[in-house]
Amino acid sequence: MIYIFTGNGKGKTTAAIGTAIRALGNGEKVLFIQFMKDETITSETKILKKLENFTLKNFGRKGFYLPKDMLEKNPDLVKYGVKPIEEIDKQLAYEGLKFVKENIENNDLIVLDEVCIAIYFGLLKVEDVIDLLKKFPQKDFIITGRNCPQELLDIADLITEMKEVKHPYQKGIKAKKGLDY
Image 1 (cartoon, rainbow, N blue to C red):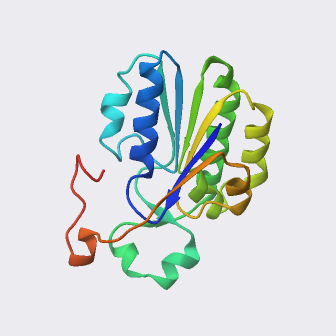
Image 2: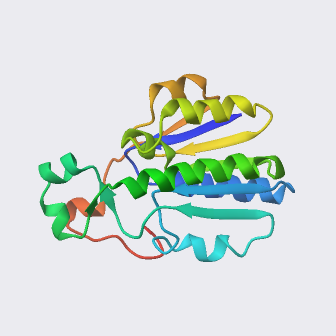
């Protein structure tokens, strides 16, 4: 099965974690790969790394980064520490995909967290992700991230779109550690 959690709203990774916990409770092994995220960026990594039969690996640099053209259109983001995407980001994304291929046989559920945005930003090719999914049809996959490519949506068995209706950021309230990251 291929599950996709996408959309502009909060909760994509959280939904993937919840589903992964359910799989663990059923005796399954989980491989959870986070693209474009350093292990220090979110609080959940601290507890997830302690779980038995749960492998969490991060393939991203510390901080936040976007394509150069997006930063040029939104120069205020640079003031907040957002950096331009570099070649290393593409290398890390492909290292993540390679890690999945090398470890997929030992796991039942494979989570490709933020893979959609990695594709959207040009760090991965959608064809490479689809090839992986098709090569292992007996495995269950969860795919997360904004801007999910249509090619992935077309082959998915379940799609949930998170829709932002209201967000504290709109009022100038910053993200809260432990709840938002």
